[in-house]
Length: 277
Image (cartoon, rainbow, N blue to C red; front, side, top):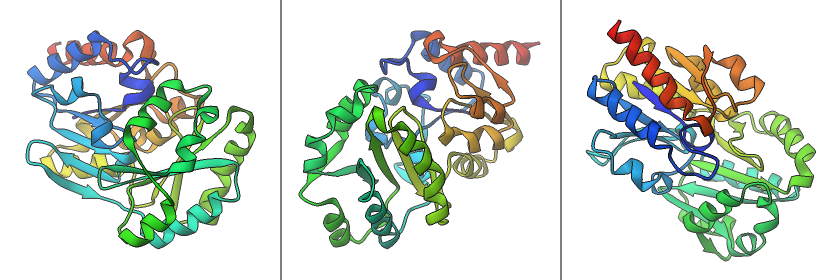
């Protein structure tokens, strides 16, 4: 099993996919390895070039809140945030200088006024702003919409302006203390992603390995963000990108080249050569 994060890992900074990475995934699949996306995104947010790959079937989504088998169109694993807990967390977010959204059943939801106010929050992440516009459905009031729907959420997310970085770092530490049922991570420069303690890319990877009868020791995971740390630690081989933070590198077994240098491909070819040897 080869599980790979998208943003900052498989994808370049401009959100394109280096051709070398696609070729390496194909080479791995030809040798019986099973590639799997492991992203904070929902399935709709996965690049079409990846979904078109005939050998790519499994997707760890929303930071491990769901594991999706695209061939059978079934969810293999789920770890939702109950709606009442989500609403309490949003009340806390209302005390912060942030805008926020959520993922729920393959749909992004966001209060319309927050979408309109979004550009200053993404001064350092313009490509992420494009994704937000494409994947969020505007509603008059997100909290009221969630109350009416009454369903669990896969992920909550908040965004900070660049000048509020100190507040973002403080919130990363404070939120789990206030809400022990939740986990706070980050994947891009301006966000905090909030999931249930029952979610997590590592837990989802273990669930996928169990479903497929794969020894977790024979799994490889690639990542660059704090939302990848659990997965890097739980995989048989955790591979951090050169562009990852020191915290992420410390959680990994080794470091490959950066996402701008097709580091995923470099390590896959190294693993293939080791197998051939």
